[in-house]
Amino acid sequence: MSTDKNMEIIEMGGRYLMQTYSRLPVVFVKSKMQYLWDIEGNKYLDFIAGYGCLNVGHSNKSVVNAIKKQVGKIIQPSNVYYNQSQVMLAKKLCEITGFGEKVFFGNSGAESMEGAIKLARKYSTDNYNSLRYEVITFKRAFHGRTLGALAATAQIEKQKLFEPLLAGFKYAVFNDINSVKELISENTCAVIIEPVQGEGGVYPADKEFMKELRNLCDKKNIILILDEIQTGFGRTGYMFAYQNYEIYPDILAVAKSLGGGMPIGAIISTDRISSSFVPGTHGSTFGGNMASCEAGLAVLDYLIDNKLAERSKKLGQYFIKKLMQIKKKYPVVKDIRGTGLMIGMEFNEPVAEKIVLDALKDKLVLNKISGSTLRFLPSLVITKKNIDTLVKWLDARIKEI
Image 1 (cartoon, rainbow, N blue to C red):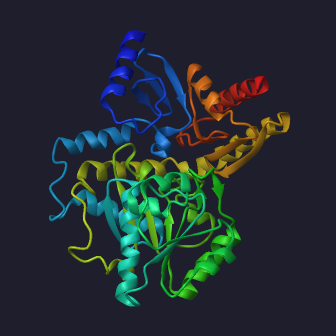
Image 2 (cartoon, one colour; image 1 turned 90 degrees about the horizontal axis):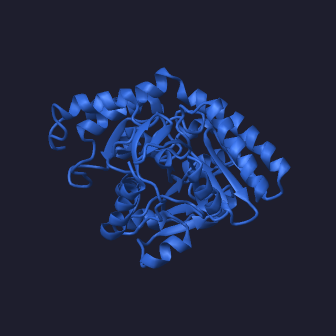
Image 3 (cartoon, helix red, strand yellow; image 1 turned 90 degrees about the vertical axis):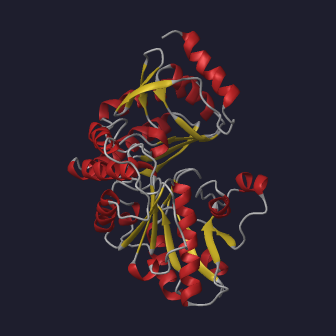
């Protein structure tokens, strides 16, 4: 295809799409595992994987076949009827989480967070008192862009344009248990935390802090909600990031890579807490549709059969080691942090956007989460050779900087 066709799509998108994204000047039309092809036939190596949606790779054959098979039969019969694919995926999620007993399906991470907040408030109202509605989250956190999830997202620059937000949210300091204790009141119903803050800069929680937080919530009868929308399904070296900390949540919110590219989100909890969701308290027209659930089943099978969580842990260690070597060579690199294949590279200067644009010209797909920080979220099928390709490119580019 010609450049004219590429520009035609970009210009048409500027005319007809709401400009909620700062889109990069490329049109992708084909994909396979860790690779993308643009409308002109150029091949790219992808290190962001749909913002962590594609842990099993782009257009994974197992996922594609499952979707094709299902859409030829029935896609969504309505949630007032039983749905075999939904039931089987719920069963599998309960089994692999190690604590889950009930699942609610939505379509996205933001919906999972909205539902988790509702469930925590409803449970607390049912079991304690009607004033127990306050939720503690953490500075730099990101939980979504709907109004409830945005209220939980302690980033002022994202919140201030949409005030007044949902009331009842307080913001603690990440990895500081005393800051959590100071915010707890008789009205606190839940604490929400990402085991690794993703949009906030790729900051992993300290192991001791997570254990103290779990113990504090137990002591105060506060529900611990873990947002594993980005960290779940092998990303951090375990199926779920909470396994790094040897704890369990009360409510787990997941989405992104569960669908292998299909829209799906889930809230997973215990029988005790889930009993507060009765008919009429929550719902979703398309949540848990059969095509997305069949994709989810294929994703989980592929993750387990190919031991992608273990692969993520080993490759993540290799990736970080290579990036640390770059950090030692160039003072412009401030920090390397992360766990598994969820890694941040922070600079002392606002160079991230230029690096992303330069990488795109050289057929590498990267992501920035601020002017000074890159985030790497490759598919878990990435190879050492792929990592070496990127590291070699980064070394040369940062040397120029």
